[in-house]
Length: 121
Image 1 (cartoon, one colour):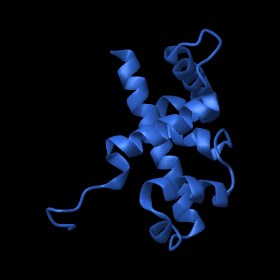
Image 2 (image 1 turned 45 degrees about the vertical axis):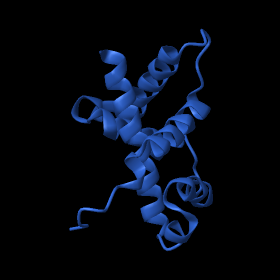
Image 3 (image 1 turned 180 degrees about the vertical axis):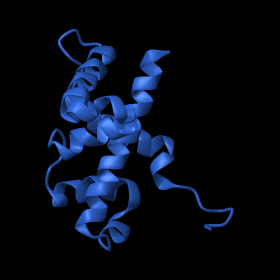
Image 4 (image 1 turned 135 degrees about the horizontal axis):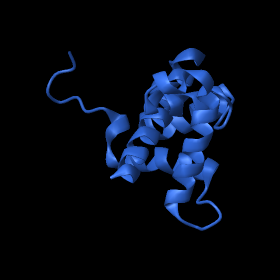
């Protein structure tokens, strides 16, 4: 569909770092100063926000539920500013508010899932 030269901007090392820093800025490193405690705190919150749906949701979806629940940037303008750093202002300015919200939620969900899987290993 995109050809051989297309590379997703959200999966680059730089973009993943931006997204993970976003997660860390909202969940910090916990009282012990360890990265593991921040992932644990986020995991506990994700389980709570998912509620009774938790056993049926993927880790990605649970991470996205944190965005839906207001644990991260809540306003479209704030989410748009964040996404500008990954996709560029020219591109993101064309997006609807729904696309901005869904993209932001999916990026947080994806990185949460990957951070959680890394912790489990």
